[in-house]
Amino acid sequence: MIRALLVLAVGLAAGVSQPLACQEDYQCGEGYCDKESLHCAQCLLCEDFSRNPPSTPISCITTVTVCGSCYEG
Image (spheres, rainbow, N blue to C red):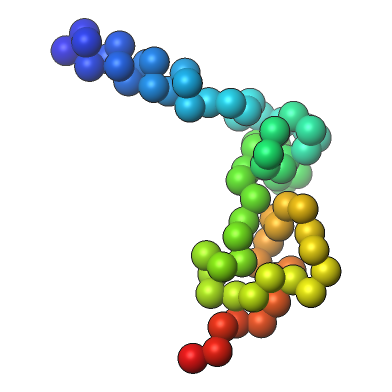
């Protein structure tokens, strides 16, 4: 039981590389700061939503509405 908790604690500590709360994007490493919730979030990939990338490259996609059109088929 103690060993399982230790493994979990070490895993969580190693996996957290950005703060949970933020005020600006630079505080979130590779993600961005969601200005409504003031929490760090990961950038989105249009491909995860079966959409083409935006016509103008964007370094961090924060909403699917900036993605291109849906995949055909």
